[in-house]
Image (cartoon, rainbow, N blue to C red; front, top):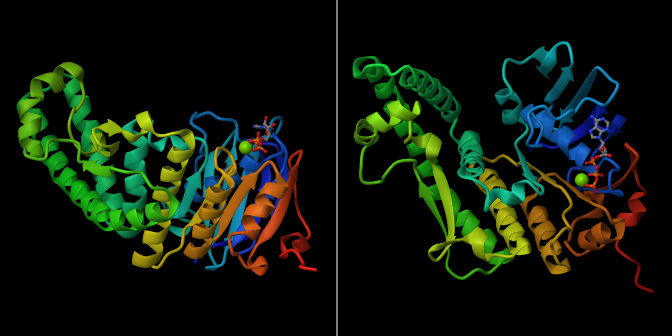
Length: 373
Ligand SMILES: Nc1ncnc2c1ncn2[C@@H]1O[C@H](COP(=O)(O)OP(=O)(O)OP(=O)(O)O)[C@@H](O)[C@H]1O
Ligand SMILES: [Mg+2]
């Protein structure tokens, strides 16, 4: 699949001890502001990626006045993931009870897609988030990608260090050669992925939002009509004076435009949210079809900025994808109303309520379709 069968969270943000047995389909989490809804999604994200989804590096996920926090997930695939962080020992990751070397091992087992206020900035923010978006997809379908990416990053760091020291062309040459080699691999991986992914995106967009002239164009990080070797040679003086490599796959982007303008300059907040949702749902659809793998969706505050019809459309698409989803909102009635119009089987769904850092499962009768008298 995978989906989470059992989730245990300990002293993570305002969640003291939380133990949940989520449903395989939709999990709705309602609760007032500050009750702990986003913290649950953040804990799941932490178990899948080994980092918080908040921007800041030092965001305090460990509950105030505690020394450590942990998240434990049992998946329907039989995989058990555990992640803990403590003030003394830093991060500790376990897969099947064994210490794991890197967070990449988590991501393999628990592919996640996050839709929250930050994710909706995919259109208006810088290219880094869009590169990460592309790379998420490539990572899950192209197994060599992670290795290529690590090798590339090593070459880039080494080359940049030499540039900062004003190294000679001869000293730079071996790193430049390797950098070019891995850049070509990364570019090819990304290009192949996008070539196959875009048709999925177009299908999902059609069912979610109509925007005349919307285009998604891949920029590889250097000019299409020149080789990276030529560009790096041409840029050498500039790179030496700046102390970094100005062209390469670390500058890639997915340019999202309407006609000549960036889509974020034109579209409303709600429309941007729909396009980002379509992009993420399409990655889920692509993974399901092309890699027979379902990803788990974390959707924080679904109702924000979306009208009723669009909320239902997103939930209907989630149902069609067939994976597990966690959807939060402040108003239980709004979540239930969306749920009841999106065709989910109540047997596959659960409703939770967050209050002052405590999470309780609510009566599943609330999810039953209303009786017609
Ligand atoms: N390290 C921490 N220790 C204890 N509490 C924390 C920590 N970090 C954040 N909090 C608190 O946890 C609470 C829950 O935050 P969370 O973002 O999960 O709320 P929420 O239910 O998503 O609210 P909203 O509806 O406003 O988005 C907040 O009151 C926040 O101040
Ligand atoms: Mg929140």
